Image (cartoon, rainbow, N blue to C red):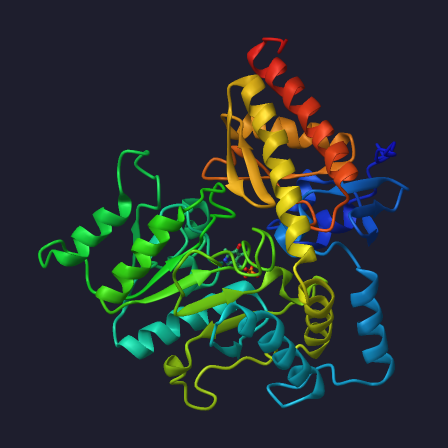
Length: 435
Ligand SMILES: *Cc1c(COP(=O)(O)O)cnc(C)c1O
């Protein structure tokens, strides 16, 4: 089977309006200076007729691709029938359908018993609700987060985020969080769970008793570092022993990205609290959830709220996505197989150049040595019609976040572009031709 490679355009559209009126805070638009007007499946189109293969997927917000026909039809039908668009936290048909479907297809088959809190619609809203609830329930202030963690940009979540450039924008001290070394931070010889246990057990360590331990199983923005199941189980035990709640931030690694619906499935521990957002709506509509054990549901009515807690359009597309992709094991099997293929291809590229890979499932990347090399690679990819971005403390990881529904042959064609761009960039940077 021959894959028609994308046809990017060289023409850069008139950007005067953005320079004149849009804030300088924009970022992705700078590395992809085109004007996009349409998207379907794994493709983005610009207004000059160019086509791009999307290996970014809205930072894993579009796990099921752009405008999936089944999700789109469900939303069109709902709008056509004058379904409720905005409902605060009112009970609606769309919300009941979502909760019932989530219970039947996600919670029950996994033996999970969580209450769902509809927070404001972004990931950071779900994280704020999670840490606020943990502090309320435990009566403690301090949260343990990890090196290279990313949890969002509002003050509470930003305090849990490691990246100095992002923290610097806060303008006020970011407090009540201690950043402890993530799994592998000190190299393979140091068990960082043991270090944490020692600090928490030592009354003279200076570490206050935590309300929560907040962790990503794979650090999406922080460099695709993967925590081992053993380390995560240790962290879960440590949280329990010290009276802290374990929060898994599954905003990027969840919704199928690492294979299962949750990234911690089959690992032998159950988080007290879980945050979801990004691909939850399935179609890129804003929708976030904070899940927690029923005993933790100590909120009084309205104690935490938000005008956009009830994005009914997102309930509709999320329900359609759950029914279509999560009614049986087919989708998960496909994702696992594609994840293994991605691993093989990236490992081969890394071996060719003496580099290393990291990640899990369909959330993997290649450490290319520096942010400059990574940028040269992503720029070369974009020129050939492949949208791909970086991750890590120095943006030194080129990360593949292809839609989970991508055909194997298209995934392979995109990886061919990456392979070639990597070879070129390394040749230019180090002046050595790869043989
Ligand atoms: C993206 C992300 C967030 C923040 O989500 P927003 O919707 O951007 O607020 C939080 N945690 C993780 C792990 C993320 O990847």
